[in-house]
Length: 209
Ligand code: C5P
Image (tube, rainbow, N blue to C red; front, side, top):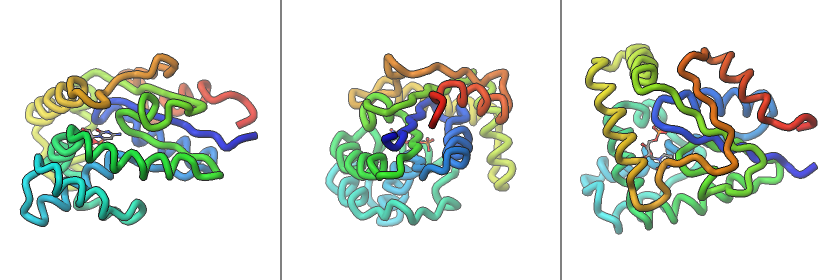
């Protein structure tokens, strides 16, 4: 059998990252959290004192990323998610990062990728596509817990507002907006815990994989 590609998309804090990691572990596949690429691009610009909306600097920053070496501690915070969604709206940045993501997906052993446009743009040929959603309130609660776990100030109302702003920016941008592929399985995790979401997702993967 050809190596399997699993594409997982969804909005911020929907549970897609946790689900992607669990599926990758289960099937022994390499996993790429593509949000980290946009976060690392934004981080590099901020560290260099450049503007987030300077396309030429942003492309240079994207080209300079090493796919496997992310200092997640410096990328996971609220501010970097917001900054990432600004650089993610620059077409030339997306084109640069798309090449790296496709290279990862086409590894002979297969791959799990999670992001916003994996099933629609990066891997339209993926074997399994899952579009993960959850209510904004549930996502804000999860993000607040996650931030508290990292000792970041986590005000629920501010997080809910962040999520609304990021949803709006990611779904309405001209290029590769957040959207379910026509052939994606919808998975609403509002009422599911991590194990429940994983069990539901496993049913979308054909037997024999
Ligand atoms: O998923 P995460 O919150 O880490 O993503 C940060 C931002 O990066 C998103 O809000 C989105 O704007 C952008 N992104 C994207 N396409 C992806 C992954 C992330 O545009 N495939």
